Length: 161
Image (cartoon, rainbow, N blue to C red; front, side, top):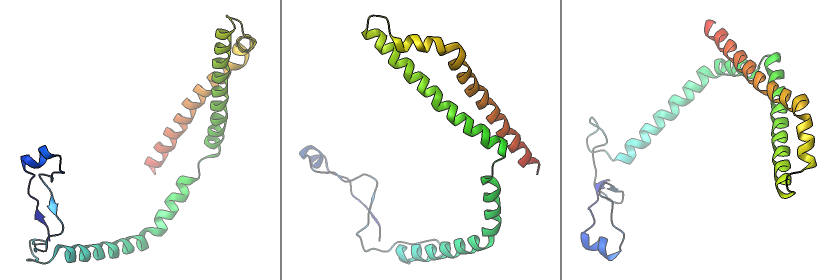
């Protein structure tokens, strides 16, 4: 079924025609090759079909025997603790707040650059920096540490079970 291809001649390469690969196989050949050490000269496509059927049967057996245990493990993993879920939601909201803060800063700096150094957006941003923006960034960093710590503790608990 598979036979080695021949390599392209130097003239074919210089003329611009498409050369054949050096190491490849011609799938259109009708010769038979051994499908395996114990199968003689059986056609390779027949051996592949038989192997595929065995694989499908094994997959069906594996799915039937482990479906209940896999479903219970997936359910346990899908139910995060209430504290971690709340921390994650706060972190997501705070992350988008920090992105909005950065966008505001970028627009303020661009406006100040265009107006010769003064911008009402940037002036307001400066006033809110110590009372709003610094705590928001601090909550984001602390929350990331807490979330990572809770995840680590949870993995340690699962390892001890």
